[in-house]
Length: 249
Ligand code: AMP
Figure 1 (cartoon, rainbow, N blue to C red):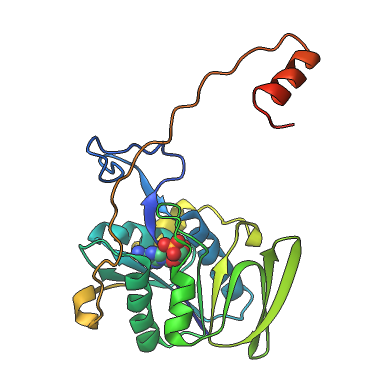
Figure 2 (cartoon, helix red, strand yellow):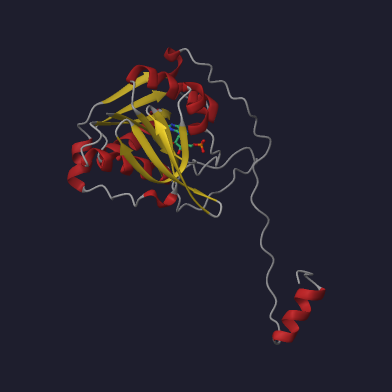
């Protein structure tokens, strides 16, 4: 069974994001980029399924600039067998990515796509759902547990107030939630081995997909600065301020 894992190159989650002076976008100059954390969880899950003997091949796919090859190498260092870069120099929004991934699914015929629930740069939480719709495959989002049972996949999802368990026929799309697993660190020998794993590059234009952006960013701005706090004399003073100034009780 083949699993496809879409991985996105995003600003590292430890970086304090800065906004460009003209407020058109986030400033990416000299900023550390890494694999989207939810995609690390997706790669980990696919590799664990391979280690259990359920999956035979894990293919990592990324859409974007040539620099995204780094992200594929990181996925391969974690255990993915090969990588595919769908190269594009234009801004790719979730619908465009979903269409490109659909083309790759038609070429590669995976039994499952495991992607992150959201990319931490655009916070869209759309690509997996759109891909499932375009392919007309069942989907289970926000997975906290994934099990294979014959030709079915059983996915436990985190929902408000509890857990929901779904059974779906394959092929299917799964998106990962934070508690699905704890991704491994790539070891140095595996980072070295990953450099020799196959990495194919496909030009996005060659897939005949309309990737034109549908959304226009009007403005990107910093959140308002937090105002300083005040010291209260005692509990009575605190209650008085909450009641009469903040009006929250
Ligand atoms: P989003 O809908 O942008 O929040 O992204 C959800 C998931 O879709 C991510 O966690 C990735 O698994 C996948 N994805 C989004 N953009 C890309 C991209 N450019 N290349 C590969 N995978 C992507």
